[in-house]
Length: 178
Length: 72
Image 1: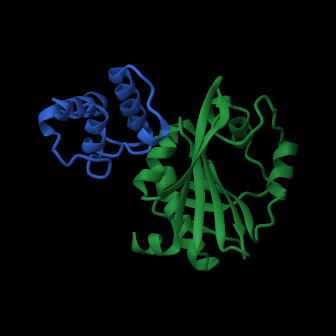
Image 2: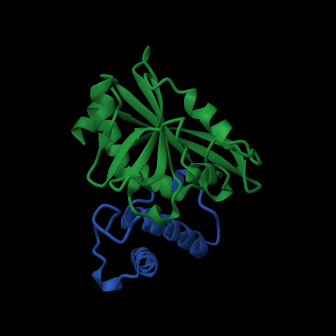
């Protein structure tokens, strides 16, 4: 059964490797969008590399979810890996469509994913993170009451500057009590 | 004085009349304080302090009180 997670304004569904949206290729080749993602600088994505990337997820414990408007427009992605032996998921978000920056898309779509995740997997915790200079991402974690549990100092060079990585967690109890 | 700096920062970055900013202003109760205006707020604080904030300071910014604390 195909997973379909719905929030008020968005649909979250696994990306289809046989039907790759050209916008997704553009986003992954745009340094402004990818500078805070774990993508090797200068790496040029193609339809083939993206198909391979999406196909590497089994859609059982690991997913690349597309974030779609209700008019079926792809505007971003959530990547999820569930470590079943630990009951922990790892989540990362990318909003590719600039028109949807600052519109609260990560907050709304991630809320829907957290609701689904804790029920579907009966998981105990979701973890995620952001580079310290990615202020909108830090805002979103704070806004959603994630708990900061570790700062990895000097994690990466971005624009020639050493930046930290901030690790956040959201437990099932914390989420259900939120 | 520090109290006013926090309100000045929020007023400038969020384009709100300073007199409308309440003492308990925060990212939850100010609709204008979204993820993009948060960039402006952090950069404005750095500009006024004339230094870059460290990670511990950046992740604490969520309300008027946390902003004012940076100026004390």
